[in-house]
Length: 380
Figure 1 (cartoon, one colour):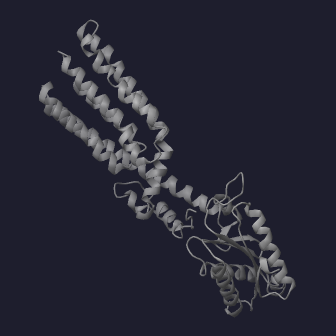
Figure 2 (cartoon, one colour):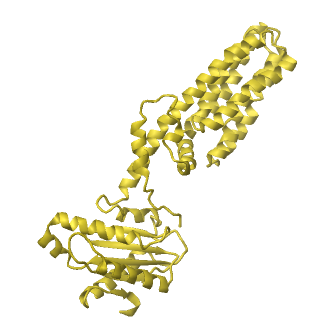
């Protein structure tokens, strides 16, 4: 089971986003996204923009082919010489169309997506080799910067900066045989455009960082109980198959259900605000007894559910008893507390509802037989 323990510092990230909304050069992406979140951020950015960049890749390829008609204008006839060079971009385009749906990682996407603008540029260089009139080559290379810009929408700026920079390598290498008349002019025109594209990419990436953090915050809020800070019952939808309601993991799981004893009396005698304090207290204490792969869920009212993952019978008995003792002997600002707990082992061939129902029956048994105790369903 994938560890989806809620990130405690997501709200801090969101505050940083709000603080740096001014968008200036100092608003670097690492100011908003913690280092441990960067891989997820770049993958999210790739998933968000990859379709747009894919369409742009196709447009780039067909735009390159369309420049054949410009060649014909320059020759004043059908340009047989540049037909194959212009059409050569179809080969990398075919490879791109074959693979782009299979590419899921942004790192693999970098290799595939940037293939198209580089292929288009070398198709242009090959065509220019056959042209007698090379007065418009500067405009062609300038257009290539915008081709790289569109592909870079889905990519990390740090990768884009390096790969886009190869445009100058392409120009310098091709000058060895194309012998551009105004090479210095080509470079001085290209450098400001390159810098401008990189700055625009930084702005766009920072803009997406706001979107990413807000999205993560909303996702977290949708599965987090606002009062106690532990998960709410919607969290379970992420870790079970929506069709079979079976847990995705093959690891051993125990489900424990616990209830605060006589919680109604707490509300009646001390007020609902005091009841909220008790719920927060219990939620915080439960989190201290679980491991990273486990889940603490407020199921509703004063009921909590524990999912103990990769757990055996001795551990679940030990953990649940430690929790019971911790709550009963611990101090809170309202009144003494006790809890009742029932638990059951999840069977791989059943849905989680069956196991939850057994845990609930064990909890009911505990409450009917004196409360302040832990009951294993198999002992009923």
